[in-house]
Image 1 (cartoon, one colour):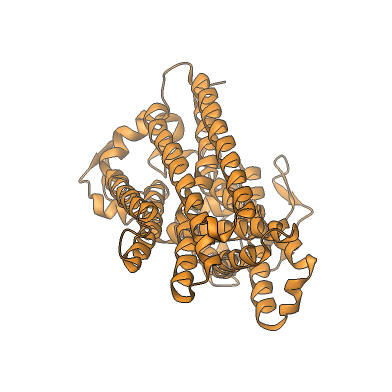
Image 2 (image 1 turned 90 degrees about the vertical axis):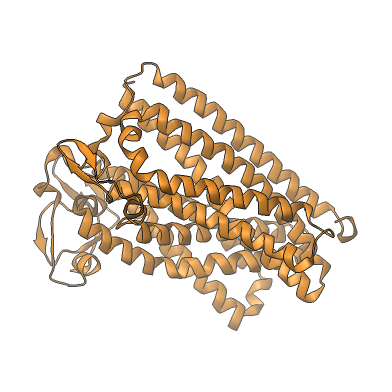
Length: 437
């Protein structure tokens, strides 16, 4: 395996794992503080029991997110020294600020975990809010750095040199807002539906039904709202990509010929040889409208781009279809929940209701992973769009494949440990009584 392929595979593998840990760690504190607030307002001991159960989950994912994130930071230097040499001085600010947000989150989490009956109850609750806000801030800052890779700014590139560096302009690059908005909503959608699905499964098993119903409602409310808002964010993102990275847009739709009034493809199989998509469903003029707000707008096709600047069309297209398809299903499920809660509460006593959300447990994270594949693979062959190719940034050091095996081992151990800890927490929650909490 060549260095470039091994480095790409290792980065993809570790990001696929880390993004799950990071998103749950970012979103779960909000579930925790909502439950805590309900306990403060009502005195219902079930909410106290739920809050203390969720805080353990927050602690678990904080630790695993920190470990997997630290490993990723080492990877940047290990695998991509050419990138870090030039990008470090430019996008060091978001990484530094992310470190500061992480420390704020760690301090606030310490206050929250050990502050029960020791500090003012309202201040104690507020430290939980800070945990959530700091976690979201960390995510936004990391996404800002990734946005810079898609829309490099804050420097002049002259004769291969990065001059007149402006870290603030790099931080607030043209892609940061659309990517951060889309990512935050994706994190809330994925985590909300995953947590709700776990509690729905416990309800089907008749385990602590009152507690799990309260937990389900908190989690799914966050997830459903985010899922309903996500298409708006997706539309903003698509228009941004159409403007800045037209080749990525063409790859997302596997659109080969430049034309006006271009249809939107749903599904389909990419034929690389014939440069077409077979067995797709077409919505006339829809891609032109979604990309440029004009049903007759011209959309540039892949055939008009240099061959060495076109990403892997099949991977990008299929990942995009998975992301959009699952996102649409989750949006409909979110609307279904609100309709049921408002107009058809009797449905919540039926097994089909809970089975639906159990079935959707992994859907948000599958959509999230597919979205990141679109973002990262769709930018190839550039590590810094139009500035530096990925092959020019990779380390020349031999034996990178062994580093890949090491990271597979570390992340596999982390995943097994997290799964075991969560299973133990759920079992403990189901077997404990309110008085023991």
